[in-house]
Length: 453
Image (cartoon, rainbow, N blue to C red; front, side, top):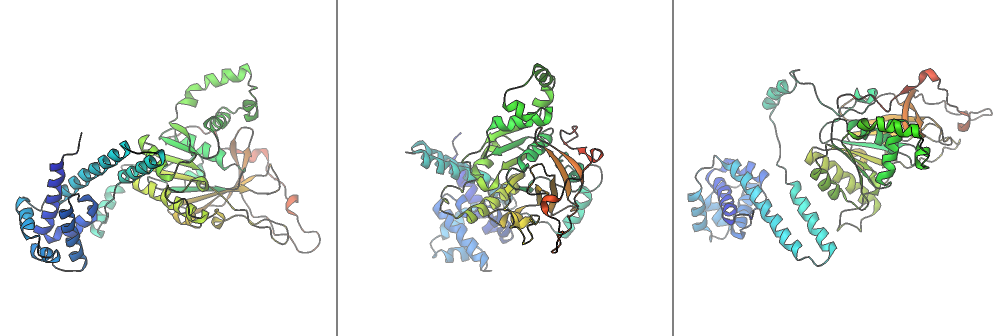
């Protein structure tokens, strides 16, 4: 349905009339509407004059506004106030204006898209439409009195809090991830962060809609890894098409379990954060995984930015995507390997090793790090730690066994920092430190029994 010009004009008039009739509604109205919402140029000029006078702590009424506009708007200002029935409904007028203005701008973009001459121009217009659909959120505030009253409503014990659960009890007890949070999982290349993220995503998808956006592997490759983990099939046999008849029977028997989770795998090559946001909202994802952050391209029109600037902008955009839509964003991130010490040992990574930008650790609500305990051993236990946790506890790092054949992890023990090598003869070399786990220490994590999400 076409936007009604009369409805849009009426909404503009009602908002301006409310501000002119009652100075107390000016401040909250300014937080809800923008000058771009006023399509009629004369009305936009009046809005900007009101905003300028208010910002300068001046009195705002028809006389002062007319003076600010060169004493040429007197008749129009009187007409606006006469046709505005009351200022008491200012909030409803503002919401109507925002809605009508949004529709108007989208229709304008649609008209331009219809005559676009090349795909790049069309993509720019689609980006513009997506930005409009994100919306301009108003400022939300709360007095201490309101907060105290709401506190007991929120914490009366009648409704248990709902947080994202990960399938690892030590994480579920410490990480209170909820709508709009950003979680970063950092790891070195080829040390298991994608396998761990897929396990998380599959587990969460038992009760929530999850989108997994990959910039590295195909949908089929990711699906094979999930099948290996959840059916405990050897991944190499899957890749070589060497499944037995018994394997096929087992898979068929597991079909309900393997197909009921609400997990979608998306090949995200060339998708910007804005593209991911538009797709995620269209498919109503509650949780989005991005594998991985440094691969996300800059928004169109910002392609000349340095890698540092691009990654910083991507991190901020992912955080705002989550905040503005209530989507939980789990972003994988590469780690930069720290240089070896003079004694040949490699220090454990920290948040400062998140590659290419310090912005990532600032934006994240939670930072998880996964790395090999012994950097020169392929089958080394993995160290897993909570490096940042805004609203929960930190913990002793855990030693995990990564079963690459089946793409699953199991807990070995708490991680204890190995003794520093001695400078004199007989020093311990890093390649002499061995895995000390025993069979009784293994506590398998994945595939987990399903619990409420």
